[in-house]
Image (tube, rainbow, N blue to C red; front, side, top):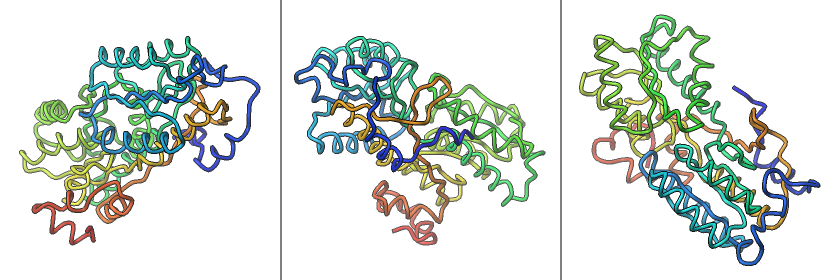
Length: 354
């Protein structure tokens, strides 16, 4: 893990009161983007609604509330998994004027948008996923996410009495076009490899539950139906993997992230060892705080950075096992009634979820 890339939200709040002599990237005019009404608008593009429910259910309302509560306009749109639509949305937003752009990349579509925005003097915040050339990057600590996932695999193997060094483990990563996917993978490997784990099969990475199910089924067949654990990059992919495990009457350690309803249900049912909880509100607050300062003409000082020098604000994730699910409910990031359906009710009662 690269602990050097961490900065707490508290530290950011204090540091961002400092003013630097110059701005990074295209933010040299304080994010005015041409002045006038543009300086009051934060333009946000979300990637899709399929890879995770978080974008529409969590991030959109959190970002909109924080930005509008600060007195600015939030133009938030979703590319719905379409790079052409991503570009079109960006052109429309830029034609109306933006004081700052906050972009979640989708298959590299945000790179060209970043260049266009900076050419107009508009600073760009890469949100959740890194973007080449962005002025800032705000995300959870992605290598820590992977490390927590890797640890959940080790914990699951230990509980099953399995030696990691001899265990048959399949790796099911995310789409390599997503810059975070490598960080999740590297973080997981940083924990699993020292314990002796090497991937028995590693199908192509995707962010798609159905494709993950297909890929995993092919990997399981190649292994003669034997598997001891599956490192999976997120809950959506894990759900696909679990359908194949169920089909074959198997229960093994499975990792995931996002604390989705399906992920939390699988954790409670013992089908998924844990999920990495990323309280979207914390990430949205950090990004909104940064965007608002840029809209106000400030240049926050951030003392951590990615390997390419991009200022990096990282938020710490949380590993959630069955006894921790109530924390997600208490935080308002999951609804007990939605989790505790008939087939999960007994598990909810056993782990105090309600």
